[in-house]
Length: 292
Picture 1: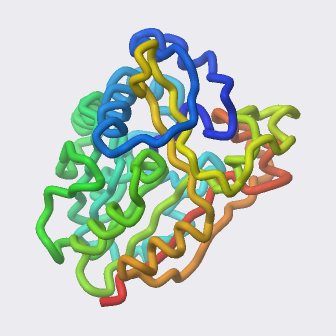
Picture 2: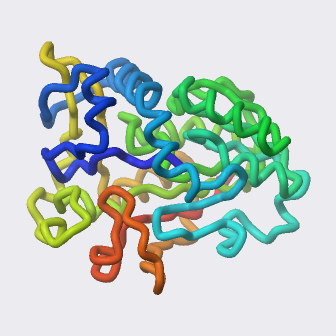
């Protein structure tokens, strides 16, 4: 599961990412249009630079071979959003935006044939290290989610746990690629930051309870260097945008899960916290299927 380092609703950068920003020369925040080439370069550079820090902070929570859907702690072992346990054994499964690939290793342990795809070589380096620790080895592929280097009608299930979608300029392009590689009737399940979080500052405390940005402004959030080159890009879509992108690319929405903050869960992850989680959702999980 890859999480955004700073939600687009705030221009204040998180000090935890100071080393990564320093390495990339990040100087300021902007809101502007960013195309696919610049976005890919920024995401590749960011996640390569931040992989060690990210996994040092979140690796224990994510596990080496576990499928965690969101900071609220929803796990596939209990939620079964991909289907009953017996559907995974023997299934061909693609994970998009896999990070260090704990989800794909969990899928492999369930008997699935898993392919884990990520843009970042830094993240995939950690995935290979975890393979040695666990003995679980899904196929690892370095690629952009907007151009999957995979054959048509290859997979029964595709999934993404906070991976790639919020950093991709075109949902329709990604969803179209997923539809292409799925077999008819295949499942596409993905989690993203809940779109309503865009309107609030990226703060787990009381400051993060006041709306400051328009929900309907889709202008990308950009961190950039002194020359104006993007070092990090995040795209905002409304719930309706996700639904329309799905239906236009051949998917049928089966369910939209908005996890509640569980009792006793005290972990703060970026903007996710018990304080905010009690009041409004932090995650949206879409469960869909390819219609033809």
